[in-house]
Length: 190
Image (cartoon, rainbow, N blue to C red; front, top):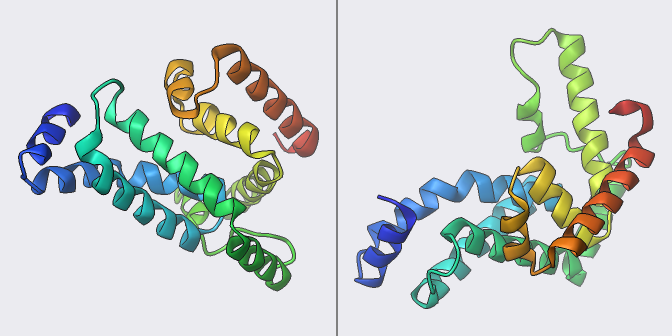
């Protein structure tokens, strides 16, 4: 079943339909949250919040955009709110103190090292991913969201404008600034 058919089934009271939507998008939403937050526990909590918000709001879905665009908008806004919260800032500072390098060790980024790589290549890949995530974390929220949605998630400009509410020119400008900033921060790494 496509997304719209599942939503219509949910509107009729068939709860299996929402479960199917969750199974279809849970990994993508978790990875999006992980990119924003840089912490697997925070990403897990936030992605659960995203699906809870989606469950509560799905009866108001107007079929004006695709479901995943609507869901991504909820996820991006949830991540931004999590970052802004004082509790998150306090917890993040505590984590940086415990791990001064800000490594993502123990997080989902570890899976990105390919098992068929030799150990040196695997370590280099892991270090590059940690450096990239640290650089992304330093970007302003609006730039961070567009670079994650476009360059990491691979969404189209149209989908990103639907999610963020930015006009196309604003989106391209913020994406350009984010990419420039990342190139400056990462230099020889990428």
